[in-house]
Amino acid sequence: MTTTKHQSTSTTIEPPEAEQITLVREIVGELPYEYYPLGEHIVAAPGVCGGEPTFKYTRINVRFILGRIAGGEQPDELVTAYRGRFSMAALEEARRLEEKHGPDFFEHEFVP
Image: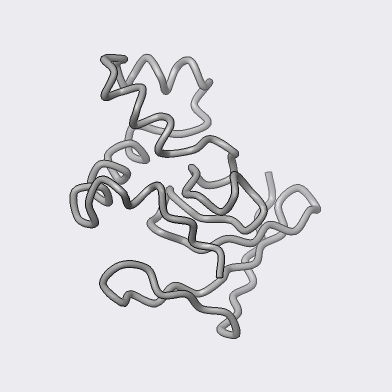
């Protein structure tokens, strides 16, 4: 997969704690991909899952995966089941973001 990043400062949003996030535009597999980076592995992409946070380059909803873990599934088994489309590092980042911003963080739509 070839990834080219094009950053734009024209569109910003204000998530919790007034952190500003800039819309990032990339070409992924010859297709445009726009997202707000919420971390290194977690993004909110307009038009993907209603703008709710997903793991970068996927349509896998972070809230859904954290709910499965809360229900007793093992994180490493989920990474394997999803064929590595997200990593243990991505799950750790999700937990840190949830701890920092509260349990409703991943239910927030980040599309302006």
